[in-house]
Image (cartoon, rainbow, N blue to C red; front, side, top):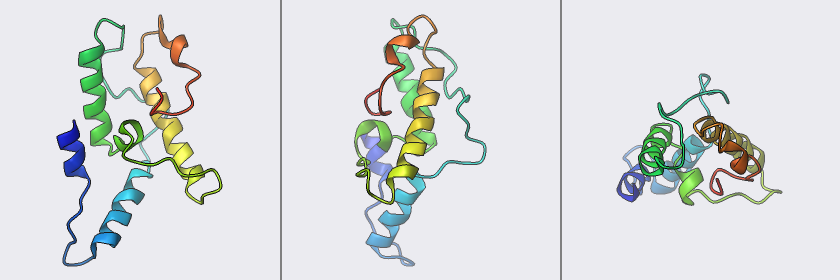
Length: 122
């Protein structure tokens, strides 16, 4: 996963933009949701039961990678301070990711995860 995540984080400037502009655009993209994104979405086909953690984890990381949201769970995207202008947008996206993950956990064990405060913690 680190190889994929590293490739998703561009550091080379393009001809049209400088490195700083390009990285800023990439960070903004992480903080965006698509019109089709909603809290009831199922990102993976199998639910986490406990015994299938390794395959579920891999599937979830692939799914979050396709949505450009791995930074929320792997720590590459810093949590903004609560007085930052980005905090509310970060919180909105983080709550969506929490919903997606909770939707993919078996009803038998999901209660143990309901009170986590961030997707990274989950």
